[in-house]
Length: 475
Image 1 (cartoon, rainbow, N blue to C red):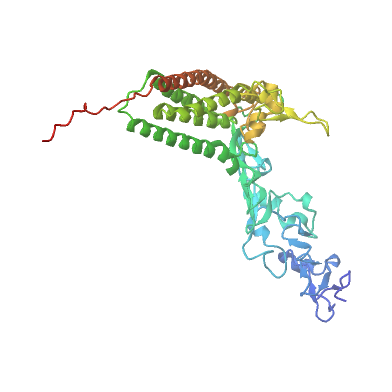
Image 2: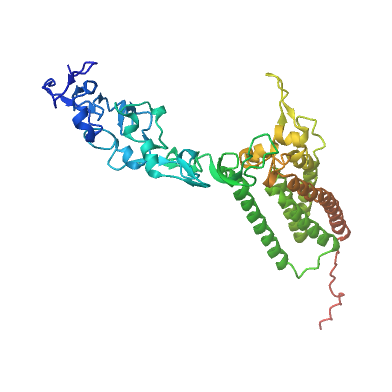
């Protein structure tokens, strides 16, 4: 029966052992140059198979093409394991009806090429290593499994494996998915979450004395230092938007000042404008840190202050004083221990399941929030506030030789380095001083403006008519 587990034996070349109706005889044909000898071998009896549901391998065995494949080198093996090979012709299959496993010409041999594997160095003449392609092919050939033509995949002395170039790419001997992976040296790197970059690898991890391959670059796949679109938006696009809005606001302020340049500004008004512009300059570096909200608010209040000094409106002066007072509370956060009056941007969970979280003292105010970005090496490695906020700027250990070359106590780069955090502390220290000075100037300007209004009392003018003259008598 065609559905039976065991196949009927057959041998059509020497004896008339035929197969049931509708079946053909699958005979041993692996070594055609030895056909006159193998035809009489008793162990080379063929198997009957139904060509509609089964296929014939050149080893004389039938196989189910839905579960197995016939490899040119080692015969029948699972479809889940690629066929061993040393050249593309080894990947065309050993079926008696010649056709590739997928489509014509899609099966090719994938081999390691850089550097060549040590197994390819077959013999040595003097100090010169001679690599013979012909000898390598003899090592990986159908004759390596003579006389049965069948062998285990793991025992084949082949330097490559077959691949289907419709959905696979060869990555220096490793098979990668063509649709969403790219090749990094010999690593399949997922293009959605990783990228290829140059890195330095230690010769022996954990050993600082081994000098082999010092400062040799390798292409390595990294997910930690991959700049995906979301990370790029927070790192580059958002600061660009905020800087563009700041420049546009300053341009509008300059235009308003130029239109009213015919007026004479008082010393207080000039001082208010000068301090406001200096505050803007020192505040915009906040755009390149997790504390960008402080920069947005401080720059907004500074622009309102410039408009106040130009317009001389009493109600706008009162609004500016109120905004400056709120800004001081926001920058210093004197009530950070209170759940209702704190301006802390983060909260700390005590760890209990039903315990209420409390304000984070390390985010209470501008300077503590900046300091939290690089408080200590332990905080950077364990708490990792800055690198977790950006999900970036942490050095990938796979890309750096921390044993022999790179400093292991420098774990970050970019916006999360100690140098940049130090510069931010300096800039925002000036912002705090200028904001306090600006608040005092706004108060003085408000007091002077009300004094001017109260001292300028209205002048009453009385218009009298001419003295009355007695009418002339009328005669």
